[in-house]
Image (cartoon, rainbow over all chains, first blue to last red; front, top):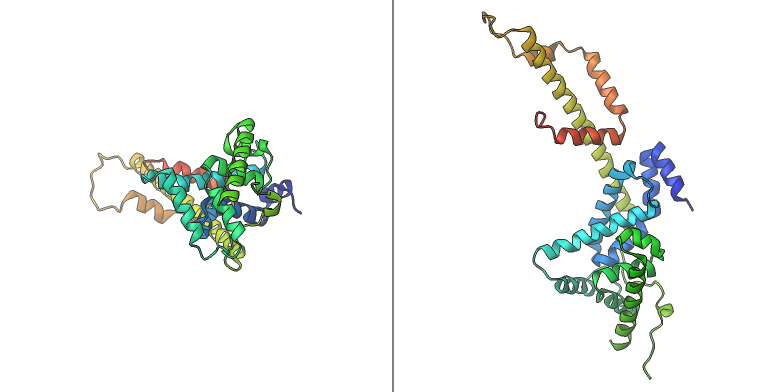
Length: 178
Length: 120
């Protein structure tokens, strides 16, 4: 499997080939990260495209203060938050945004409703407050270290650990009682 | 006794799906957009370079054609005179220079031009 150093090296010498390598490596995990946050495939598709265009434009300025992966996850997370906040700016409350996401989960062409447990699990995740949801997804699905999540979300490691713990407890409770 | 939920049984399964060949098509679209963006930036830099050249030509015209001189015949505008006299090889050299610029340099030029009230 190709590593980040190799991707950066190729990006510097052959930008287009390097960027293709970068997309091969990160496209899928980043799409799933976005999808879990915005739920709708169509929204995730638009955001994913914007994220990679942004990465392409700013790659020469990437300063290696973090890993390439952390930087990309940070851009993707910020883009998702920008998308979700846009709804809030339109005078829609956080609860209503949460309800919209839940509706999108329950009425999509790209959800396998036969897998009832998995649908219910996503519902449980969508019930979480935004920050807990991000932390839970990054830790549970992407298996990122707390230090990495800390750099992505600008949150202290201890706070993240508490958030993750509460998120798991709430999900457990939802899965048992619904 | 209350039943327990075990995360291990759930694993990483998700109900989400994507259309067929979604990732292949997405990669193609993004690469096309980046290519188009690069071409667009080169065109903009070329335009900026020509605008700067025309401005310099007008300035030279002001210096070499004093305003007190009586106008006996109708002259074409200074920038046109200079444009017409431009050596073709200069244009090629400029194109070559722009082609050799990195994306970062092009981005800097474009950014600079966006804040330049004389060019915009």
